[in-house]
Image (cartoon, rainbow, N blue to C red):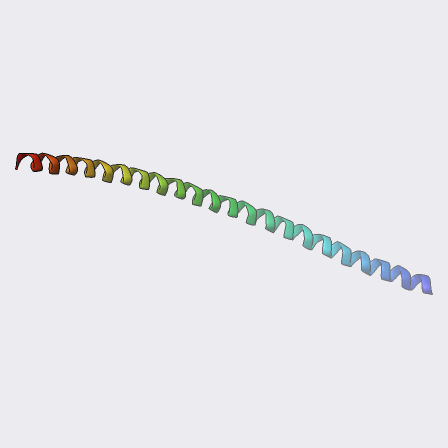
Length: 81
């Protein structure tokens, strides 16, 4: 009789292990999907950051150019009067 109980216990443990294995596989697939989505979002953030830096650089160049032109005009007016 004890052998029959051991067999049942082993069968139940086998079923539990199979269930845990399936849960782990599903969690792994979920993690893969999450990492894929996270990578895509991170890539978009990096691209946006690059675009913002480029806009800042262009704005700085524009303001510097305008400042230079206005300084030249002010100097010209100052010399004339």
